[in-house]
Length: 99
Image 1 (cartoon, helix red, strand yellow):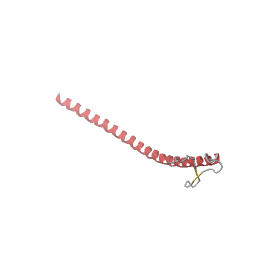
Image 2 (cartoon, one colour; image 1 turned 90 degrees about the vertical axis):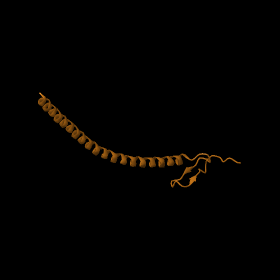
Image 3 (cartoon, helix red, strand yellow; image 1 turned 180 degrees about the horizontal axis):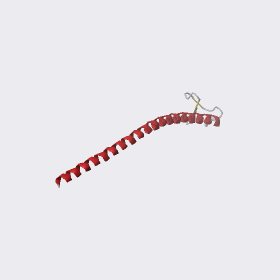
Image 4 (cartoon, one colour; image 1 turned 30 degrees about the vertical axis):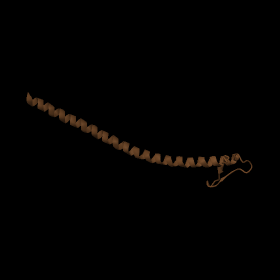
């Protein structure tokens, strides 16, 4: 069984058909490598922009939720203070009635 040789390939701009540099069968030209790297960077940049857009949406929702949680916390604290006052007043009247 014959082993195949490993020849580095570079995809063209369509991304479908690999090609090998005809001048040197072992390595693509620097321009080809640069083009592939630039395409890869462009893809990564578009993915980063999409992720940043999602992050911006999530931050907007988080800001709205944080404000709602702050208001709920203030309401909870006021209810706790009011119930403490009611209970302490009822305890005072209860102890005064026992005397």
